[in-house]
Length: 332
Ligand code: PBG
Image (cartoon, rainbow, N blue to C red; front, side, top):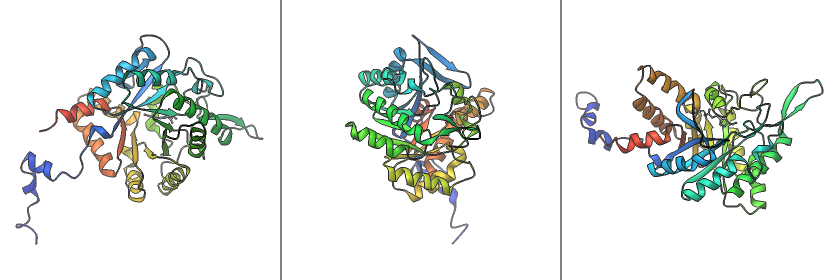
């Protein structure tokens, strides 16, 4: 049977009908809001390449987290900008590290908000790389995988001690999920979950983030540890390895240019899948919207829906708070 008995437009004729047959629905309970915490007092500094996103000082961030929780976003993801940087990123795992103090403040003010901490060294090292730099016999510098693992485990433990619910390693060192799991378990943090940035690509879409987190590499780039954008099968191997090492949630990052990877991962694995809609994905829509070229709300919701439709359950997005407001007022 075909036309004229079948008319696809019938079910599109009314709002309520369209909603009844809607296959994908965004829910604010799936969103995670990234937040940047910086040194100083009473700081709320807008990130120029990410309009309406801010660096917050520790004394102000808990108030912001509470606002986010009250809107209905269930979780925040914290990034720290330290007072000082060095070769080993020691301000990442110090007990009084900026992220540790932030976790404590947020957990005191709104205990039910899920606090996730990014675990990586790039914001804390003076060279801006995600691990320990060594030099090979020919004089070429490289990020040493195994020497970095111990520091990442210390960082994750410091965040767990401060009260983080989930730690999220984003460094792309091999074996880090297993090492972090072991470190947490040996110290009594069996209940702290790991969200692994499993398939994290060496992407130009991170551009604005490096201003936001002050984490641009001082030499070279991250192509020796982050994934090569053309590869999909390799992403599935990365995810399988992280699951084996004990990840509770796995992630694909970025999101929009990697919807096929999200789809393949969600078809293959039964573990909760997260997607990170990164800084550049947000910035390009904001820039076009500022010129009147795109409607921020409609485009924002359309992209978030696409990420959900591709198979991501959890969506990390700079629109988390705003999209929740959009969805709450969008019943028509
Ligand atoms: C840290 C980290 C980065 C992002 C999240 N964690 C930057 C990078 O790997 O260069 C990017 C997030 C974004 O662009 O929004 N390694």
